[in-house]
Length: 266
Image (spheres, rainbow, N blue to C red):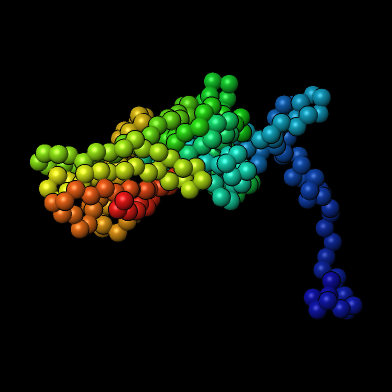
């Protein structure tokens, strides 16, 4: 060899060639019939690639016995063309939870990271959450709570519901709340409050109470800045007087239960 990369070579000795490096590795990849190739992901999870007797490759499945889900889990689906990079992070709240309006016949799955090569999760034949499972189908239009427990094998639960409006009132002649409506084009809910005065109204909250193990979540506004906060204080209407006034309230709810709202006098 010439350490300088030239042609002034020095004999560095002679050793018997006993094995080619890649052949040495191949001896340990498959040690018996039916055993697959074990692949290790960046987070240390083992996955096994198998082939059938007819030569068909089977997708890797986790060889780890634990049923623990990843610390972070994201939802994606037909609503974003199954684009992993824009998947929605499930909020950890005892279970993994997310809120989203989904049209009828939407399909959803879950993925361990906002990366197309990350492990994905879907449904088995009993709607249990498993690696590389099938899509979950949403049967009807609606605003949904999506909830997943922290262990694979439990079904993904979807709740189609409408948020509730709770008024803090005093005295007589309480304000009247109109039915809640939703505009898919703007992703906003809206309702009207009529007959609001400084003596009969002290704020309102939005309740998310479709069911599930996480129970009801109440949205308010701790800083009175137009942003929704989980377990926030009631939202106030400024400049009320003894003369009744009417208002339109619009709000949106993000996947993680944050959001914004506006109050307009009508």
